[in-house]
Length: 242
Image (cartoon, rainbow, N blue to C red; front, side, top):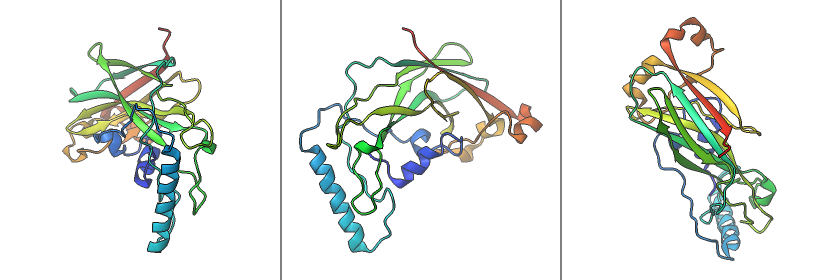
């Protein structure tokens, strides 16, 4: 599955803790099919890209890097995932949350396995998202786990095996349909701890419905001047030994 330009911009906003994407804010994640692809899938995707390219030319529109996207309806799950990670989130908010869950985004990391756009030559790199459960273990702590190798590496386009990896991971705390998420880009190896600060007033702000609250780091001037006006969410991600 390939993200639209809007989705690309939304996902790009996660690492810097800008307003979170609608994918995190409550819209259902991109779907994943576990059925095996048929042998003509790559040909269908190529034909779809060519049809899209022709439509752009006929319409006389400017061509953008992600103006056309090839369908990814045949992403498979890894039948034997082994790279298990644990996510621990602690929060000291002004009140309770309506829901808490984990969010992941995956992307193909070796772009050479993806065909180029027939007009511009750019590659529309596939990405997809998954949610995972977080369980409350005490008044301030939630835990959950995910697999880094959840998706099956596969030759989806006839250009060699595409390799999937996690690009972003985060807990998502929601109240009044607003989201509080200290999302960040994962590095290799994945074993990190991160704290983000959110305004206490945003917890009560009904105007943030279906929007992600803005997160701050400890070095931000606003936090330094009035740390009592913020509440922290700390996330630790580490490789699981079990």
